[in-house]
Image 1 (cartoon, rainbow over the protein chains, first blue to last red):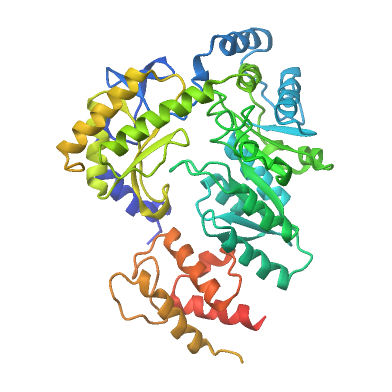
Image 2 (image 1 turned 120 degrees about the vertical axis):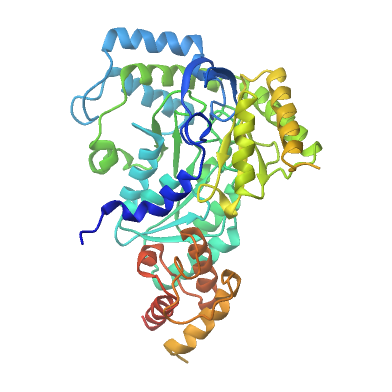
Length: 401
Length: 82
């Protein structure tokens, strides 16, 4: 009897098949039309988008769209090549200069996605004799970077400097000269909690380890000029590598890593997820460049965090088990039963509100979440509408008393 | 003082208690995925407790080879003997 290669997915398929078919399946949503950063037509209905990580509403920024259009007309739809062959245009170099200016670093490398930035940097920088120590709640791209590389991978308890220190000391005891890379995130996407970068990085430095901070969910959102949580906490000098994405606050797609390491540029030759893929299309590069300039000088983050606090406070006052604090753009309520979470999500859609249904293993501690990511582009009316629907459906489903 | 594999197994079983929701009798052949119905994240959490108990580094790289409690006991024995 021949083994079916797909047999291993039977359990996944089984649970997926228990979800409703068609329009109200949380994992097959399709947008018929997009009206603005905060509204789309889904299932023929005008729907508020409350789960798109479009923190600055940059996807429809006029200046970004104009820059993209100009680049599209001047340079065409794509580069059809790797950065190290024919895929570096003037725009890619300008974008990297803009990133260096944005972060005040010596070096910047742009990747085709944020996922590839983590994959490439972690898998390349940490070699066979090195160690990578990652936070337990790390994003899949960090776990995958570890899996792709040849380093020894160790995991520490989420946001726990003492637990990290214990692991560093154990490694150093056995291997005093090994290279060590500690990987953390500025903001963790599911519950919006920040890493205590100072304490974690100081533990790392005590054992001569390098520190990588993924600011995917914090670029634009935190820090005086929007660099992220390390800037907000005043600890940028403790960070060796900053990784981020253009697919959230920057409003397009792509990833980057910035650093002051004197040999950083060699990565352009040895980092396979940088070399063996096509570079970003010129229009994407142009809009990302423009968005970074705008973010640096904008106060949209104030409006964004006000919006988030309004929803978080409203949910908390209504009596929900809220997993977030309102200090990040994320608002998430915890739903005990997965069936109820699915029904909740569907009813929110029927009322014209798109949020994320987040379930294990994408969530920490086995939580089922109704997760919202706020945008500076949300109006107060939209937030109040979301809140009203959250409360009405919560009562209907017995989540709220 | 070096621990034997069976002594390590007994200690691992004690550390497994919070993860043995079905109150199974734990044996060397008890599997994490099938018998204990643990997902990969729970297995990693459990390994963290085991790491701290024995004061060793258990790299995530060996996770795919750890299907049973017996595998874990053997892995800890090997790491301690290194």
